[in-house]
Every structure is written in C-alpha cells, then in structure tokens.
Image (tube, rainbow, N blue to C red; front, top):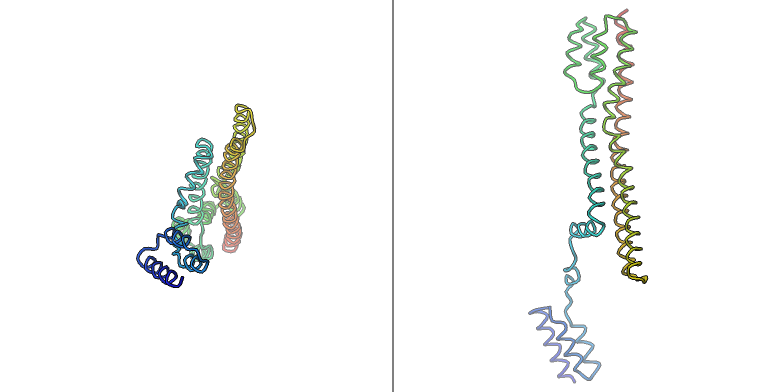
Length: 266
C-alpha cells in the first residue's frame, strides 16, 4: 500500500510539472487502487487548469452578433438604424452647442469699450469676429442702434427667438427615434408570439422548443428597442440642458446689452 501511494504521488507530481492536461489518466489510476487512502491523494494531486472553462466563451461582439441574428435581421436592422441616426444627430448637436457658447462678459466689455469711444463699427466688428448666438444678437441690435432703443429691443427679442430655434434644430428627430425604437421592439414582440403560435398550430402540440423560439425573438427585439431608446434619451436630456443654459445666457446678455445702449445714448 505504501509503495503504491509513493509511486502514485511521484507519477502525479511528474505529470503536473511536465503537462497539466491529463487529469483523466490520474483519476483512472486512482480508481484502479483498492484502498481509499490511495484514491484520496490521487484526486488531490490532479492538476486543474483554471483557463479550460473560459476557453470556449465567445467574445462580446460575437455574442451581440448572434443575438442580433436571433432577434430577426429585419427588425433589429431598423432598430440599429434608429440608433445610428439618433447618435449622429446628437453628436452633431453637441459639437454645435459647444461652439455656440460664448464668454458674454468679455464680449460685453469689448462692445462697451467700443461704444464708449463712439466707434460703432468697431463694436460690429467685434461681434462679427465672435462666434455664437449672443454675438449675432448683439450685431442685430447694433445695426438698428440709430433707430432708437425700442427698435433695438424688438430686434434683439425677435432674433433671439430665431437663434433659439436654430439651437433646437434636430431635437425633434432624436425624439422621433426615441419613440420609434421601442415601438419597433414591441412590433417584433408581437410577431415573435405569432410565430410561436403558428409553430404550435403546425406541430399540433405545445412543445417548449417551439414556444422558446418565438419568445426569444420577441424578447430580443424588445430589449433592443428599449436599449436604443434609453441611450438616445440620455443624449436628448443632455442636449436640452445644454440649450437651456445657452438660452439663459442669451437672455441675460440681451438685457445687459439693452441697458448698455440706454446708458450711452442719453
């Protein structure tokens, strides 16, 4: 018994150093022994490779591709198009809104210095060389400066509404995609259920395999539509908050600009 145990431990130690991929042979040797004391160390000495269990796992992009195909290429492609178009519009709006932000204090100081010197053309040039809706509003007010403060105030208010509409351009499309994506997912859900009932009708029996196929299509399309809607909703809310900040900045700067003109026209 002792010789068998010593030989078994020596053999398993040599095998674990040379190649740790033969646990079956060790277990067969251990099962051939008649004593429990021989089998226990053999099982303990069997090499274990922690990477064998994860070697067959698919990468994430392959799993997503498989689920995309299982959900039905037609409806999943429409959901994907909604996501791509919505993200394209959202990214374009984010870049535009970031470029629309202006240092209003610096702009007001530059315009005030030019008006204080009586150089209206210099003030107009400062506004032309400054990007953003605030500078455009100031420019429209400076053009009508000789028509009186009331006309300037009307021009500033009207042109501010135009600039606000330009800032909100494209948001209606993002809102449309947010509403369409879940609806496409729910439509895929209904079609998946219909396919499941059709399969049950043809087979003449309720089988778990038949029901599972249709339910899988239904659930995958629904999840896809909801994920797209959630992603676009986050971008939409961010854009709305960004626009609100710029609009508040425009209103505050417009009031300061009108007060500036009233101050230096007296």
